Image (cartoon, rainbow, N blue to C red; front, side):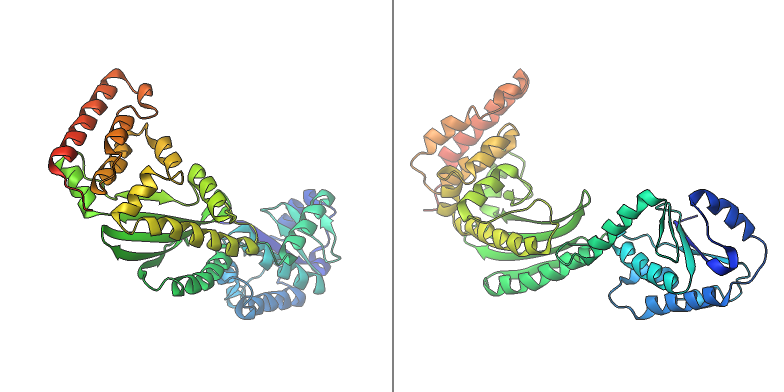
Amino acid sequence: MSHPFLYVWDANQLGLPNGIEDVPQLLEKAEIENPPSSALKNFIEQLQGLALYNKALKLDAVAPYLQLVAQTAHHSYPVVALEQADVPEAQFLAVLAQIVTIACQLNIVIYDDNRLILFLPSGRILPSQRAAWWIGALDYLDDKESVKDIDEVIQEVESLVTDLWLRHPDYQKHELKINEYKEWTCKYKKETSIGIQYIHIHICMDRKEFSVSAGINIVSPIIENICKESGRDKPRKTLVVSLIHDETLREELVKLTGCQAFTGITEKSQIAKQLTYIEQAGFTLLKYMEDIQGLDQLLNSTTIINSIMEERHHFTQTTWLPLIVARLANNPHFEAIAQQLATPAGLSKLSTEKQQEYQQQHNKLVSYLRDHVKPLV
């Protein structure tokens, strides 16, 4: 079987099981040709109608039942196996609740071989210990505040970001995409005196939680050419910042903005709060990044991003950025910054060979900046 099944039959025709252990015997009994009862045919017709006309249910979740009447027209056994769609659990639970309701009205028994549960026409659940799970599932479906699928998140975010970009008309849409895994991304950009700023918002399913994350980055040809000319590898992006996943920076920005930020989204009310944080935190940083003096202040004078830079200094390729920016901004503390970055946090954790390599690269960059790079201001 490619997917789990719901086995359904008319209780008047095949009988009621006393428990899960009776199901194999009943299904074996159903292998003898005996056309479905009129009640079971009625159930099939109503299930197809549910799939076709109940717009509250996700199409992917009811897809196996769209042509159910035609598919079972020549079925000659008293049990019908209904394939369960390969969709997120919350989406199929909404369908299952509707199927159980129809079945109770028509005296139909349902055996769910995925969840190992029997739904009897009386409303009784077997085994009895699974009844609490089913009640919890129904409560979950009735909870209007909980986020149940990624489409709900996307719809809410799309509504909110429309207003967000209206408040920032100087940013142009750069990219909007949704992939086969329903990962949604929108990206906007703005040209500045030192390059291009990008801010993106991303929605995905992350470790069984819905995630609304965001990041900003700048691409500065001026800075990147200095890297290249000084003998360093030219970076693909000048600076990349994660507003959600970088815990150190997130804590700094939450304190600065007074907003709430969430690593996972479980309730609809959290979405609006997350977008407020993304807007306040993101555009606070982007304001600094509009010119070289602002970027210098961000990297070399504020505590907003110092913590993230220090945390990453043991990945020694990141120490070049504040140094180059300080030189371009004519920072009067350039020499002190150069001396500080000569022995960044984490350098001692590297091998002696790597430490020596870093020192050589650092000294080469400092000499190049002193001798060949003129400040922009």
